[in-house]
Length: 232
Ligand code: SAM
Image (tube, rainbow, N blue to C red; front, side, top):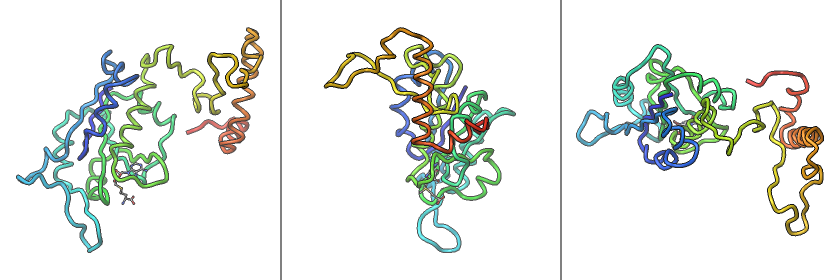
C-alpha cells in the first residue's frame, strides 16, 4: 500500500510515521507513506497556494493549480483513490478503513482555510472523508487518523502484541474491558472469572461486558447488532 499525502504542513504527520505499528509496517515494506508539501507545486517564487474566494467572503481558498500539479506529479494507477479530507465527507469508520486497506494506492489531499477550490473536487477527487462532525483547522490530522486506521488493518501489520481480534467495531460491538497485573490494585480486584482459567466462562463474560458497554455508550450499534445489520 502506498499513501501519498499532499498538505501545507506535512511535518504534522512526520513523527507518527516513526513510531509503533506504522513504523513497523513501513520498515517491513507493507506500507509506504510519501509526504508532499503543496508549496513545492506553487507556480510563483512566493510559493503561493491560496487566494481570496470569488464572490466576496472572509477567509482564503486553496488554489487549484498547485493541487492539480501535485496530483499529476504522482504515478496514478487505475485503482488509485484520491481522497479529500473534509467535514463534508462520508463519516470515516472501521469498515471504510478496511475497504481502503484492500487497495494499493491512496492520495490524501489535506485542506486548510476555507477548503479547496471546487474544481479540485470536480476533477480529481474520488472520495470525500470526514473524521467527525466538527471542524478542524486542517486536513493533516484527519489524514493521519486515516493512515493510522488503514495501516493497522493491513494484512500482517499487527503483531500479537497489539492483536485486533476483539477491537471495537471488529464484531459490530465495542471492546470488552481489559485487566493486567496486579490482581488487586488499591482495593480493586480483577473479576474472579478472568483468574479462573475457565475458557468458556471468560468468553461469556467478555461478550456480556461488550454488550453492556455498547448498550451504555452506543445504543445505535447495539440495535444494529441485534437486528443483524452489517455496519457500513
Ligand atoms: N469550510 C469548510 C467547511 O465548512 O466544510 C471547513 C474548512 S476547515 C477550516 C479546513 C480543512 O480542514 C478542510 O478543508 C479539511 O481538509 C480539514 N478538516 C476540517 N475538519 C475536518 C473533518 N472533520 N474531517 C476531515 N477533514 C477536516
